Structures are given as C-alpha cells and as structure tokens.
Amino acid sequence: MKRALVILATLSAALVATPGSAFAADASYRTLSAASHPDWMRDLPDTTGLAALSIPGTHETMSIHGGALTQTQENFGDSGATLARQLDAGIRMIDIRARVNSGNTFTIHHGAAYQNANFSDVVATLGTFLSAHPGETVVMRLKQECTGQIGSCTDVSGQKSFADIFDSYVTPLFWQPSVTRGAGAALPTLGTVRGKVVLAVLHGAFGSPIERYGLAHFDQWRDGSSTYIQDAYSVPNVGAIATKRDQVRRHLDATSAGDPTKMYVNFTSGSSLFAQPQHVAGGALGVQGVNPFLLIYLGEGHGLVRTGAIMLDFPGAGLIDKIISYN
Image (tube, rainbow, N blue to C red; front, top):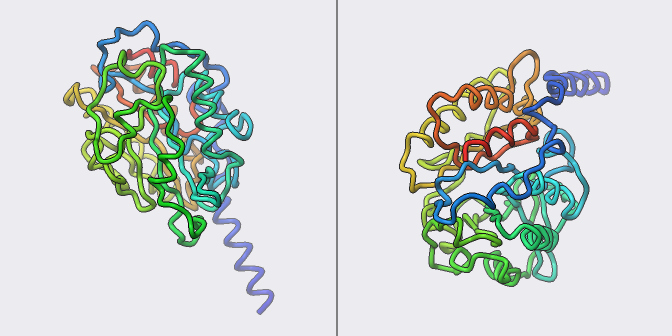
C-alpha cells in the first residue's frame, strides 16, 4: 500500500510539473521594471472619456506569494511596493482581492494565500502615487476573495459586512460618485477623475456586484464573461492557451469596433493545475503565451483604435508601452 501511494504521489507531481517553465522574459512577459510611464495620462485632453482610453492593468494585482499556482505578478516587495512599481510602469487598472479580517479590516489574499499586504497599504500607495502624479487616475476592481470553499480563504466571523468595512476605508482619494452606495456612477471624463481612484465595481465572494457601488455601466459584471468583460479564466491545459488567445483577440476586436462610450475590460489571465498563470502568460511546451501573442497582434494594428482595459499577468515593458501607445 505504501509503495502504491508513493507511486501515485510521484505520478501526480509529474503531471503537475508537465508544463515546465514558462518562456524566458521578453518585451511582453516579466519585464515590468523596464517600463516607466508615471504620467502618461497627463497630456491627454480633460474631455477624454474613461471608456475611450487604452489602459494597461493587472489581474490579481497584489498576488506575489503562494507558489506557481497563485502568483500572477512579478514580486517587487510586500505591502504596497509591488503596486507602487506597477503604477510607475504605467498600470492604471488594478484588481484587488480582500479578505475580511479581525477589527473590521481587509487583508489582501489570492485564495488561501495571504499576500503580505493589507487594504490600507493599497490605499496608502495609491494616495502617495496620485499626490505625486495628479494628472493620473487609477481604476480599481475590488472583490471579496473568500468563499469558504476548498482552496479559498474564510472571512473572520463577527465582523461588519464587506460593504460596511469598505466604507470605513473611503477617503477623498476616491472619486465620490463611484463609492456612493446604491448610486451607480456614470462613466466619467478623465478631467473629472484626475488625482482620484475610480471604483469600477465592488464584487461579492461569488462574483455579484454589491449594492451598486462603482460604475453603473458594470451592473452586469459578474463572475466570468459578459458583453463588456472577457474573463474566461479556466484554461485546463497548455494546449488550451490557444483558445484563451483567441478569446482575448475577439474581445479586443469587439472593443475597438464597439460603442466608444462604453468601457471594455479584457482579462488575458487564466489558470488551472496543468496551465499555471505563468504558462498562460508566457507560454510553455512550444505553445505561444497570451502576452507575446497580444504584443504581436497590437503591433500589427488590425484597424484597432482602442484596447480598453487589458488585465495582464506578468506584463512586460513592451506590452505596457504598446497598450499606452493606443491613446
């Protein structure tokens, strides 16, 4: 019996390891530190609608710990350090996942893995950046991370609701119409939100928007994909990366051809036991990753006039540069 268990464990480990290492860092992948765009919005007209912008973003923005199945971003340090580096590089849409902790506070998680950061770090880092770069704005998606299921975390009991705790963090740093409970703000112009954080949506643990916080445009943003969101996050194996590439391409084309007053969000991320985030982003086993594909596609043009917000895992400097160039 012991021998059988050892063989089973060995086979399981081999299966998990099958994809091998992701492709080497390049202009599209794992070279964020080479990008520097701290003020790229500054010279855009105030009348530019948020929906018209081409915005580089990060999926699971703070996820740097927990191993290959959990890490989605290059590690530039705990607390707010990784976020600060992303903002300097030009990232302007962030994806924050919070656990309800004791004292009615939020800590940052990816599933069960604590990311050595708290929501207070996120707010402080955003405040510091926007104070130094008042011509910019940052769009935030905030999600209650814990479902209590296997592999996820569990919120600390006896605390206030997720919405009530969020309210305690709201300061003038946030664009007020987007953090007013029950309101649902209209999509703003850039001039209206310079120096502010715009809450796009406040998501509950299973993906439903909470009490119409954020932008009314995203009332139907739930778990997965919808008209304005592409978030097909299940990539069952390395071979399926090709399908993910096509989903990203199709949504990019739809964004460019769609209503210019509507904001589109395109997640390039995906994962599973046999296709980890690094493999989907960078490629593995001779299969091209989403990031290099996207950099090539954007470089070729294809009649694209805007990209919308593109939420990236392990972005490279060239990919960030290219998205910003569409403005």
